[in-house]
Length: 110
Length: 112
Image (cartoon, rainbow over all chains, first blue to last red):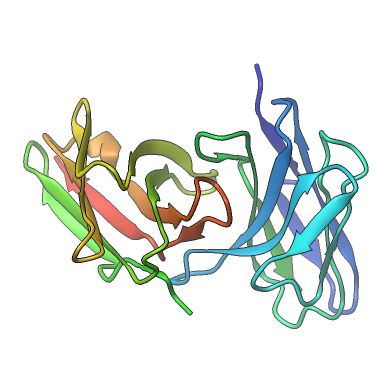
């Protein structure tokens, strides 16, 4: 079955640590996106990539980094520069008719 | 800058009755609108969409209405079922799928 796989489902990070969230898709979609969900704020765009080896900042890119070395993979690194990283992170991909989302990763800073 | 707004954070409806979820937008360049449904700890799933050339789109129990002059869209669920209980996100984009913006979501609870 085609879809998007995000891992891990839950992630705990100590302050000052970098962590990387995985997003893999086997839908052959060119475009991939990372969103962050906070209560009462909907989904906010962190980074997106329309094609391999290219990506663009979204509305809240500060403290995050991404790479797109393969079409199937779009990992997100939450760096120590992100001051409030506790949130639910969603990866999505699209080829034209709306987004397909992964099941999300809940990141908690402890 | 919240370009897509869902002003009701929650809605409670009795089973069998109509659920109406509302969404307003500010960007007149938006021409494609979608509704997503999200269960806890899961990613959103696509529900229904409408392009700006239409004012209504229907899919089974779900109907989306678009009022371009008011920059307002609504999702009607008739009849509502307990399994419809979820968070519903409204989304909009200019030139389909380019930089989609989401509302804050409305939590729908359908009571048996």
